[in-house]
Image (cartoon, rainbow, N blue to C red):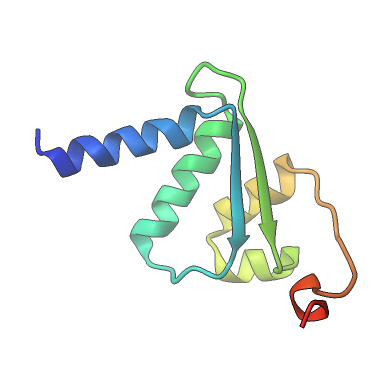
Length: 99
């Protein structure tokens, strides 16, 4: 097995099995079919506990639920809408306040 393939498999295993995974700024990445497939695999594996381990996932995004369904496959949107508690935060962007 090549070093790159071994490294990639170890990273994916860590993502799938970590106690807490934080996906930050969902929606800012460039999308292609491979990335959508990997995102689905990560979300689905963690939701269904396919790794035989209780895991928690936090997803932060500036997208509303309609945008998630528009930008991602329905099976990703439906899992986010159906399995995650959705909290909306309002207020000024602190990065702009400090300038």
